Image (cartoon, rainbow, N blue to C red; front, side, top):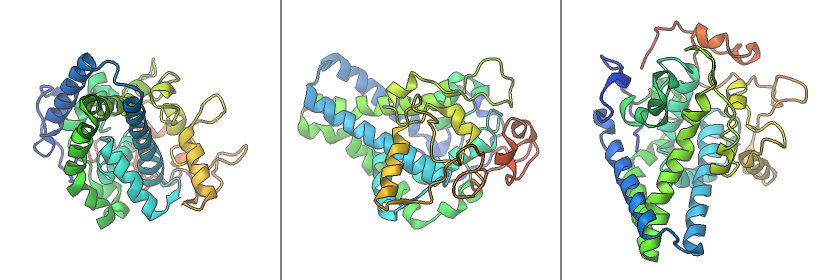
Length: 326
């Protein structure tokens, strides 16, 4: 539900606000979350066993939305770890928006800001400010990251378009199951949306709970059990991702299943994905001979920089800890 508009920093830190206070431009996010959670609870009470067809339909939409988010939003747009066919980008973006992941501009800008200031107060979803801030509250209280700064190359009509149609798409996502009956209304709508929301938000919260680290140090961790909730799509291998943010593969061995990367390999075979960036065998450089630090717009503070391998940092500009808090 987040737009792609930029916002200046707050006078007082938003994590010190009451939990219910929202930014003006994100005033609909919290009511939306309350709506889908209450509707999902009602659906679980009224239809605890909806039937296999409804479950299958709900699963397929969650799976497609998750794949769209990890392959398109995360690996292709935010990190440029691969290039996707423009028509495929549009299809995947639709399923990501339908799944409640927001628009491609807001997602990419927010994620690049996360990497630029990871584990500091300038991190848009920093666990430094508490578990629930990292898990949910930032979505309606943090403010919009600057598209102009963090992803200027994506600020084009094909991406801005989704801000205008996000509302109608979410309305169809919420109400569309009614066509198939009352049970489908709940399971294909709100229950699916709540499940997808928390499956994605656990990456910001649970996957940044490495014990014994100080603020500014890398708190990312690989969380094995989250692979089940995300259908092994790869986002749970978050420690790997923070170590090599610019490569397409998140799971680095057969013990770390990464269906998102398998899908990328398939898309590459049929010509819908190109320039896939990989680690060379026994090397810290990726196979396209581009350093994995070349994620557009990323800047890091010295505190964050000392926790990232030098081969990744080589081309990332440094900023002072107090620079640009918005």
